[in-house]
Image (tube, rainbow, N blue to C red; front, side, top):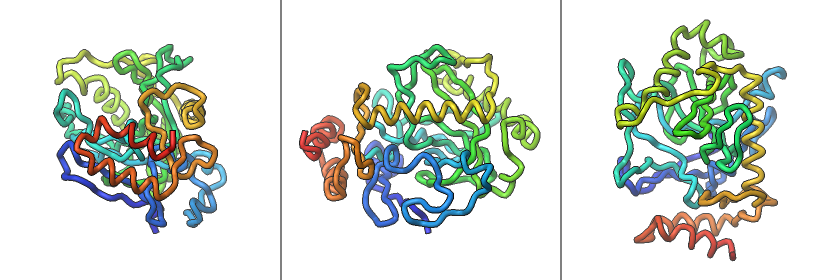
Length: 303
């Protein structure tokens, strides 16, 4: 049984399209805040999970798939909206699609994010000397299956790339679905080059060039584009999880980030299940949804 389900609202390929998340009981949740970062080896939200090897348990994470491999629509968790549904990114009033970077079609991995992480734009990363990009940490899943937008899967982390995107730190995790037929072969970043030769080089080139068709310069990387190993990646995840905790406890300035959640018991941004349902309905029915969202959130939280 799937632990999480999605509910479509609005028309795909339109600015009003949203993909909301529900837990196994059918209640609305925030994928950004309410889905745990780590996979529990015994159960998650009361549902038994596949038992992992002891030496791999510390490397099991939930990944939220935003963009299926080979597609072009830039889908993302709406970090500034109530309950953070997935939507298509809009820039200059137009839906955004990434260009095809020859010889590839769209994104070359299943692309998504780790919940309960945040790259703080007010904190300079010690490794890159650049501030965070104000988003959850990104994941490139390299398994053989093409996944669906909104799927929540279990991944093990293999390594990480430090993209510097317009002067901001934008970490890119390399991971594989634990249920992939070849997952048992992959334990660290060197295994990617061994069993999928050329994939890391293609990943580096893709991130370097994907904004060039839009008239922007090539992206830059920390560490001269070197992929760091699993141990390094796990430390970055740990750091971004701590930043997220500070965000949810109101210990730092989150700016426009919407922290409304249903399950973080000690968070000042927590709302009830009824309030969450009302937030979804009111956000969708508002004639001026973008400008009214913040007002709705504060109303329901009694602020």
